[in-house]
Amino acid sequence: MDAAASMFARAERARFVSELVDLVRFPSVGADPLRRRDMARCAGWLARHLASIGFDRAEVMRARRVGQDGHPVVYAEWRGAPRAPTLLVYGHYDVQPEGPIGEWSSPPFDPVVRGGVLVGRGASDDKGQLFAHVKALESYLATSGALPINVKCVFEGEEEIGSPSLASFFAEHRRLLAADVAVVSDSTQAPNGRPSLTYAARGQVALDVEVRALSRDLHCGIFGGAVPNAAEALAAILARLHHRDGRIAIPGFYDRVCDLDPRERAEMAAVGPSDAEVLASAGARAASGERRFSLYERQTARPALNVNGIASGHGGAGTKAIVPARASAKLTFRIVADQDPADVARRARAQIQRIAPRGVDVTVTPRILVPPALVDRRHPAMGVAAGALARAFGAAPVFLRSGGTLPAISALQRVLGVPCVLMGFATPVDRLHAPGERFSLASFSSGIDACIDFYAGLRRRSALRGRSSFSP
Image (cartoon, rainbow, N blue to C red; front, top):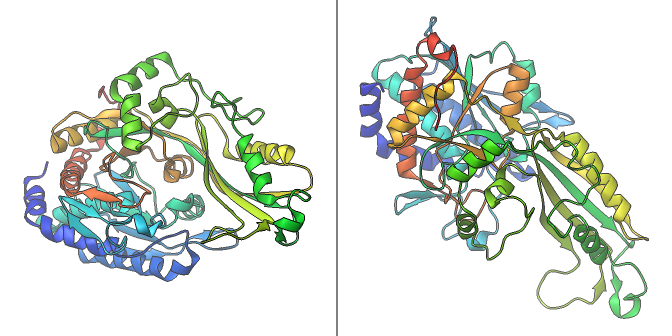
């Protein structure tokens, strides 16, 4: 680790936290069309901040997706090390919607530091992890005026909606974004607090389902029991999407699911959480899903279907005696190798329409299609990252699968041909996507140290040749 950069980072830690608070304060919810201005403001702040710490180029670039402009991409570069490798640092500044508001102990976009953690929407996913890289880079530039490697930063604003513009942005700027390796910090550590290197992430298929039974809501005292009820029809559809054994009840759904190797299952059992730990962390009293697999395997290496939300009829105070005309649900599939998101969406639409009750119209609209991702565990950059994490966090890292979706990984690998290192700093108790999201300031500090060390380890191009001997 570079001693001067490390000492600077420790001396400036309070300022770093204050600046992270400023970043988390932006309500950059990419899924909310009413917050496009907030997205632009957040992107502008990041670009100006990168310029202020010494990047040669820092700007907000336009991203395009079918039918409309996407949220802006922040691009920055420092290319003053001609004989050294080039690292692409990826992160996202968009965040999940904040609701339900009543479950937050403090306003989600008025971040507060409490008990050694920063509480606020986006604190951990992904602003805190992204900012660890920014501050590590600043620590080098402030002390020596240079970086040990060439660095390109790509911070996007659409990760939480499946990164629909990212692949086309990469394709349009392929030469600009050329790099030897990419690092992505948008994942969690192991449940026991050990640092981790993620090597697999599930893909995602998100669908909107709408059921239309009537032209208008009707008086249930007059029409109830005589005409179709959209809410009941939707409930009947959803109830038939799983078998009793927890498997997804869609013909052909498992045809391309890659089986787990027995050796990998043994490794997962050794490093992953127990079933009891998974249930405790979720606050759940019972398990669900495929019974032949551990809960950690169900979370990360097996496909899943979840109902994310249902809307129909009257949900306010008191009663309203109606037969609902319409009902809708949001569904998310998490898919695994070698499943194809378009194939899953097609099969799901066909099955939902096949099992719909008579007398109703059903519309299924795909919203997110992201393939699963695998990275090369033996790439030499993984060994560099493993050493950096071990020194920064005081424990050797473990390999983990992620049950979440990282759209950037497949785009980086498929479009840019860049190998990826997934080096996460969040903790399993950071409440990602939930009310009360938080980021450990200890993890923030250690994450900065790990980044400083990682960049130094990549200094020589020879560090990216051969195969890693790292074995957790």
